[in-house]
Image 1 (tube, rainbow, N blue to C red):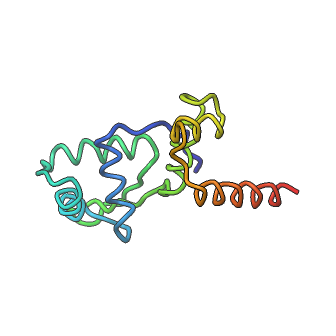
Image 2: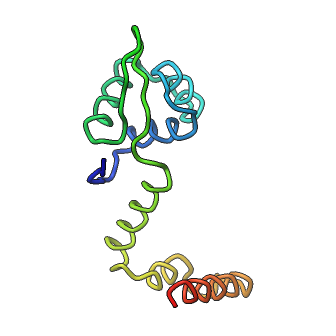
Length: 131
C-alpha cells in the first residue's frame, strides 16, 4: 500500500521514532516506555492512543488486535520518511537546489578543505551513478 506522505506533527514523529527503534509489532506499553526514555517526559496513555489512531488513519501504522492489546506495525520506514522530509525541505526552503542548501548551511569560509573534498567525492560518485 503506497502512503500519500505528509509531514508529521512533532508528537506523531516522536511516536514514529520510537516505533522505528523497536522490533515490530509494538504495544502501547512498549511505546510509553520508549517515549518516556526518548523525550524525557511523561506521556498519558490516552494521548498516545489518539496519536496512534492518527498514525493508523494517515497510513503510517497498521494494527492487529490481540486479546486486549493492539499490536502496531510501521507501514512507512524511517529512511523513506526522512527522504520525503529532506526532499520537501529542499523544495520549500531552497528551491530544490542542493547547492543553495549547502551555501546556506556553510556561509563564508566555514567549510574545511576536508569537507569540500568529501563533497567533491560524493558529487563524483553521484555523477558515476547517473552514467
